Length: 133
Image (cartoon, rainbow, N blue to C red; front, side, top):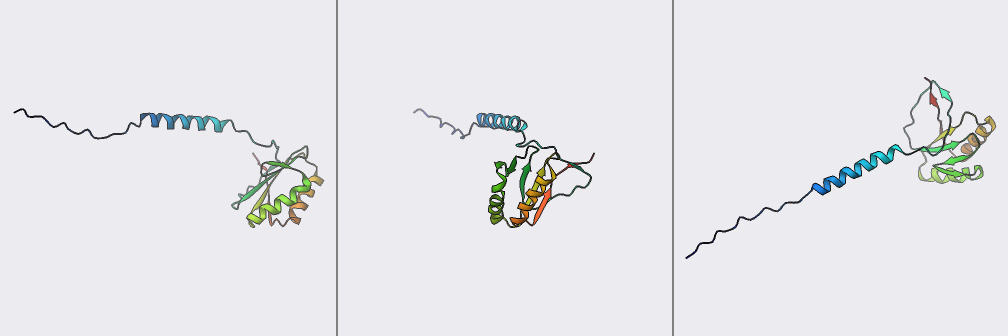
């Protein structure tokens, strides 16, 4: 009588080489794509020696030298600023408006925006600037 040998069972294994290749490719893509992100609005901020960090939720507001107004990365009309600010404050009462105003903006335009922010119920406005070198 002939004896048959039992085959050793192969342990199952998963090939992860292609998965690792895919992950590294995605990482490289992410690193490269994030270096090409450009700021939404070009603003030349005034220089100041005082630096204070804001720790609350910030709502970005940009006023460019050609009087274009951007609220939370969307261009808006100055007449609709109060609506957008009130809508955002309904979500978060303690939010701070981070006002980025170009240094070449006429002072009356700066004051107009500050008046609207005050009338909208904003408690805190942080005025952004470039650090003094």
